[in-house]
Amino acid sequence: MSQAPRPTLRPRSVLAALLLLVPLAACASPEGSETGAPALAADAPLPTTVPKGTKLIVGDPPTKVALQLSGEIGKFSFDIEWANLSGGPQTSEAFRADALDVGAVAEIPPIHAVWTDLPAKIVASKFRQDPLAHPTYELGVAPGVSVRALADLRGKKIAYSPGQAQGALVLKALKKAGLTKDDVTLVELPSTGDVYPNALASKQVDVAPIGGVNIKRYLTKFGRDGATTIAHGIRDDPGHLYVRTTTLRDPAKAAAIREYVAAWAKAARWVYEHPKEWIEGYYVKDQGLTAADGEYLVKQAGEPDIPADWADAIRRHQETIDILAAETGNPPLRAEDLYDLRYEAVGAQAVEGRSGAGAAGGSGDVTQGESTDAAPQAPSANTVAGRSAGAAPQAGLAGAGRSSDAIEGRSAGGAYQVRLTATGSQGAPR
Image 1 (tube, rainbow, N blue to C red):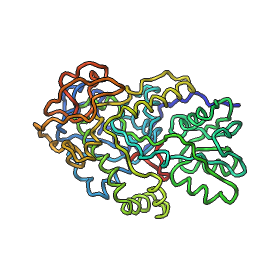
Image 2: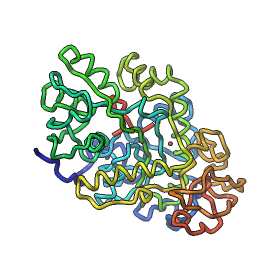
Image 3: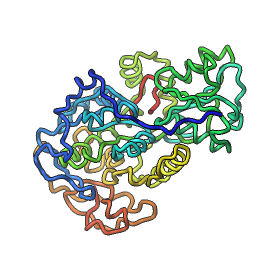
Image 4: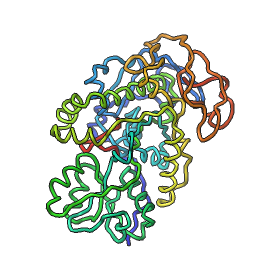
């Protein structure tokens, strides 16, 4: 049986259209300071003031539409330029071209970013309530192929996309079934658009993970020929915002990112609470889908879960890293090193309407060029992976999360740091 090669992500030139959309001049220097301020240390508290002239380039199209529909898009205390891109490969390409500050992806791109010398940190995480009842993907089965359970994957040709969520799902499904790559044939194909449904229909592959509206369309179009899908029974709901570590060294951008994370979380909640507006404004008008498709996707997504404590998410992410490292030959990583815990509770607090969530969901006391003496926020949790932050709250610091000193079990110096994903028409993060 053939095996998938070790996944690599080679730097390529960003398309000319992308460079026109997000000019290089708008991005921060490697030291990251647009204002001339000293670089922000990785364990320093997040600034709560966004200086005048700060700008973020954000690749998160669904959130842009949600903010437009909710009337919140003009309430940021900084300038945003929106990049019309999504998914891990496009986001990494834009990061490498210094043409993007914030990207929206699933759980695999941050791992591969580090493996390909693109240091990055997760600053926001979103999941689904009852994730097994609301999976992002199902395993599509080609017409005439008999697969009713994961054990039936043995001997099958399976579509595989290294570096993306679908590829990791395939590896997890094999492990759950007690199989290895040697028991199947992995066929490397991009997971974009309708590539996987077409590969199934043409019998190029026997099985492929398909997501979003492609599940509904595949069964509608090819079900009469015997096409089916099966549930994989694996949690596949992570959605993250992540940024380059160089960007986080810019105190102005770090503060603006904090405000954006809060807005992103509130937008996710708004989408859930306004399904009719979201179906019409995003799925129909923006994505060109039918209202029926939109209703299907809204039901499939269910209710968002935006946790204030990332300990469980980090544990699950570690399991994914371990599977990928073992199967690809890449070095193991510590999942917690992928997360900037200073942002940990920002989204949850914004959704709850607590102090620290103001303009467009950002800091209520953050205005352009103005400082604050806000009251301290007690964090919702003081441990990550069983370690205590061991620090007392301090006024004027950004809410929630712990400094890296606290994560390592050392005192954070008396300071507490006061979860939509990019989708294509499939509605599935990549």
